[in-house]
Length: 399
Image (cartoon, rainbow, N blue to C red; front, side, top):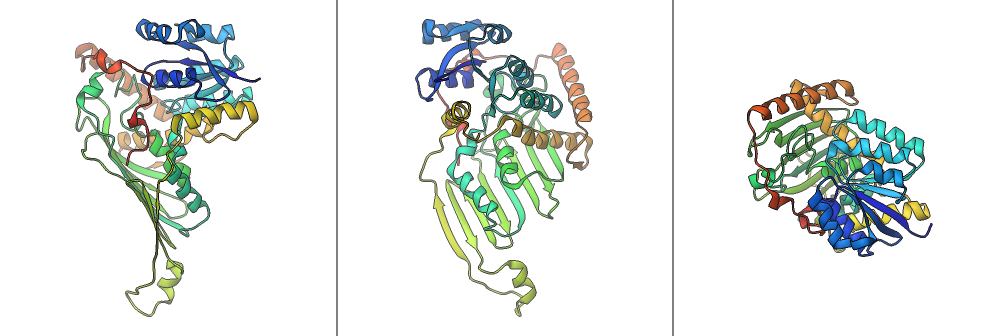
C-alpha cells in the first residue's frame, strides 16, 4: 500500500480542518477519499471544496460497507466514538478517533476490545503529546531527574468560553450531547498529559460546579485532589469561566521541582536527595545549593498534523503510535471518577465500578432530556457552527 485512503466521519469544525489538511497533501502517504456528515450544509461545503475527488456520505455505515477507504477518522459527538469505531474495526478498517474516546469507560472498553481483536492500527488525537516541553518533562520524570515524586499541581483555567460559545449548538455542554462539560470538551488533553506523565492515581475526591459561570447543565469549574500508591498526591484545577486564565504545571520531587508555564520549563535541581538532607542536616532550616535550568520552547508542536502523520506511518511502516487509541480510556477513567466523586460526595477508588457510573450518567441524561422538553435552555446559533477547514489556535497548547 502506497497511500492510505482515509474517510472522515463528522466534518464540523474539527473534522473539516483534518479533511482540508489531508486534501492539501500535508500528510505524506494519506489521501482523502470520503467524508460523511448528517448535515446537508456540511456536505455541500465538502462538495464545493473537494469536487469529485472525495465521495460524500450521509450514513457512515454505507461508507464502511463500500470499502472506499482503508481507514477512518472519527470527529463526531463524543458519545458516538465507540459505536463508529467498533463498526469500522468489524469492517476491517484502521481507526483514528478524536478525543475523548467516548463518554463512559464501559463502551470505550468495548471499543478497545474490538480494536485488539481486529489487529488494525488504532490511534487517538491527543495532539498535545507532540508539544516538546511536555515530552521533555515526561522524559525527565522517567529518568528520575526529580527523584521520587511528591506532588503534582496543574492549574489550567485558560479555557475561557463565553455564553455564545455554549449557545452555538444544542449539543454543547450537555449530558446527552457532549457527555459533560469542561472535563469532556476542553480537558481531555490535560487529563491525558497528567496520566501520561504520572500514571493513574489510586483514588480521588473531586468537586464539580455546574453552571457556575454559564447557563449550562454541566460543569464549568472543577477541582480534583488525587492520591497515588507511592504516597504522591495531585491537584488539578480547571475552569472555562476565568479570564485571564493560567496554565501552570508544577511537579515536586525529592531531588527538586519542575515548573512549566508560559512556554518555559524551569528545573530547580538538588545534588542531594531531600530525604537525606532532612535526616542528616544539623541545621533546622538548612540552605542547600539549587541548580536552576530554563528550557524555552524553541520548536513548535507538530500538533494535529503530527498525529495524522504518525498514524499514517504506523499503518505504512509500523512506526510506534504517539497516542494509541487504547490509551484514551485512562483520561476518561479520571473524568468518570471525578463525576462519580462529585455526585456521591465521596472518595472514589480507581478502578471504580464502571456500571455504577454508567447508571448515574444515564439518569443525568434522562433528567436533562425531561427538563429540555419543559424548558429549552439554549438557542442554537448557526454562525458558530461554520467550519472553515483550518486548525484553530485554541486547539494548541496555550500558555
